[in-house]
Image 1 (spheres, each protein chain N blue to C red):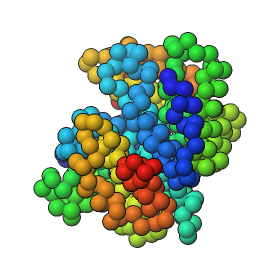
Image 2: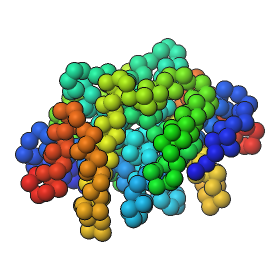
Image 3: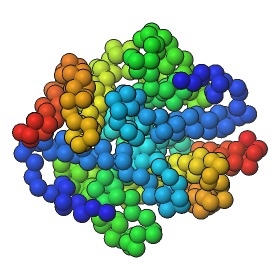
Length: 198
Length: 198
């Protein structure tokens, strides 16, 4: 866990230097492991950047098929930035002893700093829209976040050294949270595949 | 290097199963190392998915600032899929003894198969637009691909076990290929940072 003030706080010399700092910070997501996997003993788990890339790809493919239609560009952009705050605050899990409110406060503060470095109010707006989950697009991307996670759980669970039983809670979370036709259909196909009926 | 016909060739039972296969294949990019770094002795280099995520973020932030204006949604989408074919054919480098024409043929074939699995002609269109480099958006994303690479070269080069001298060719490539005002400004800031004038 990093205090954002250590890393994004002192004023860069120019707007280009500030944008460069933003881009370096965003690059940390490549080396930020998704904490949920490490907690379950999966060595060398995927990065936050890898996860975000597939969430964005899912948005690109699935948003145009949603009923009623969603704005694909906004879904893709939200997917790209939904975990961006983790570049500063890390991937906080329920096991870190940090309340949901405090997690949200830290992430919101981090996003404010990141958007300020990039001089990009739209970036902050996208994250806030996602966080508030009040638009259909935001709720859909939240489903895609869960869908991408259960996809990865299925891929790790298929490994001999892991097994599906160890990752059951990710399946449960997906069952509870995926409600749109497109995400349910993929979850159903994933379950059939897991159970050998695929 | 994998023959795409091994993995995407036999017909899935349903459209959902085919889409699921597409999504699994896309997930391989998380574990596909960017080959250029490994060739230069960098252990555990970034993945193709991590690279693609930051290219897409750069598109999201920089496309609206381009002059003349570019379509940000198309730039972001192209960034997301620009290396997607590598899920099937791997990251082919000039050191693999494969001609540029043959590389393009393999990647084009892989993208055709991936888009067929996803039943998504737009996906193939985005990749073809990127590959043809005839639109302003495609040329801009090609610059962002080079920019992201030199950013990563700078980050690896700053490590004690690597050094900037080992990665000079990535700087040279960026110097030669970055021509738009936005990407040049970031390259200039990056060079100042490297040289300690940042």
